[in-house]
Length: 430
Image (cartoon, rainbow, N blue to C red):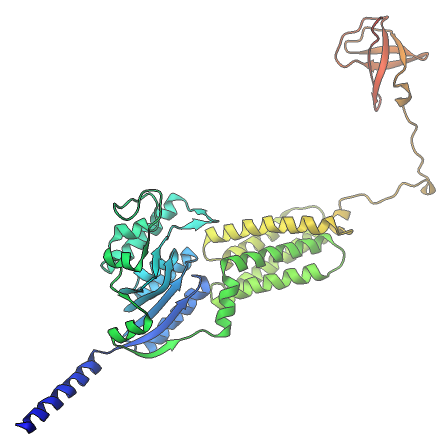
């Protein structure tokens, strides 16, 4: 009897161990934190490729982001949807991050995490209705595909949508982990990442980390830094055009533009063709300023080439326009400040006559003209209506009134002289 009991216990233990081993899910871990950007999108795609190459059954994606670019979020959503993905929101899934969270096959949250506030914006302002409509529809589609309420997802992106008990019209919806659980927008809430791993019995077979190059690329392609680099680059080159020689402004400008385009190349968002196009545009502008007189086809082509390279380096046209407008305004301000305290402006010298008409070179000032008549009095020799002839200091002078009618023989006085134009008025009798 005892032998039978031992045999049964061993069988149960063996079966438990076997079932546990079988039920463990082989996953590839990816920790995504920070801004949703082109470089992050490229990095995430490579991470998923690495997961597939290593035979992972699913991706375990830990998410913490306050959002970022819409175009990058759409690309990353496709990447996440390409493979079974368990998303764990450990912090925030705000703005574009909400789309990433809803794109997972399963989506869980850590207590205290938040999701929502996904209104698309351009320059800090709400995007146009078309953009909002497309974006909210994409958010709803991803939510519905994985068994979540599409209307609640829409309310996170469109403030015109009201849901009784959750959000009123005019406000964007953002849910806490507990609220998301109660509304069915998340599949579960956990105390922390470790608890989630243990309960889901995840067998992490590998992970994709970030190198120093990845972090540098993320920094250079972030919205604020890329716009700042573009501003400094354009301003530096403009200042160099307006000042003698080649010095610090030009070097700083070229350095900033190198970092701007370099970030796009490192992230995979753009190629060397953007740099080549920018160089071509720069050369054409230099030729226009220093070689070819006036401003014509060469200058226009140069500007189009430079602006075109900036658009190619920025996948989203709306973001490109925003960055370019901000950069141009910032550049104008910087150039104005620098030139205010800079003595040399070599470009302007091509437009201004620099010959000095001195007495030593044989130039003599012209006679003062008729200004000596100001204040003098005389007599109208003809009717002034308003122009005519007057006798002043025994001279017949062509005069004009300020518009009033003056009879012949009336006493007049010279009030002003503008070149050869003598302005008079009637002298009132006392």
